Image (cartoon, rainbow, N blue to C red; front, side):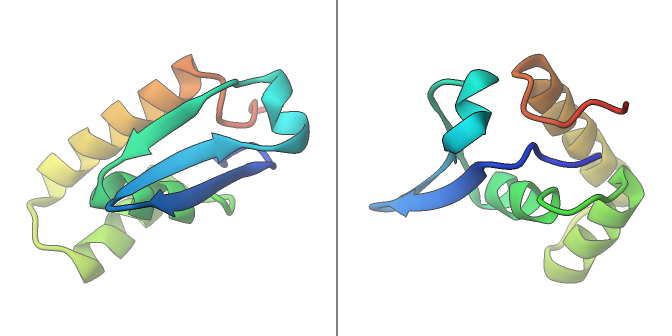
Length: 90
């Protein structure tokens, strides 16, 4: 899985946002406010990766239970899919 090209994470004040640019605007108009973990995952998803690989990187950088981390990743990925932010599997 991978974020569509054209999405960037920007910090505005104390908040971080994912924003579509260029051709990505065809799929998503607006911004997504991200917490620290969301911004970390969004950045990892800029490259092709798996949920398990994302979990491994999170576990290296943050405290947390593997099962809880996987549940958070699945929820985050579902939100990205619903918003058409992930590239299709084709």
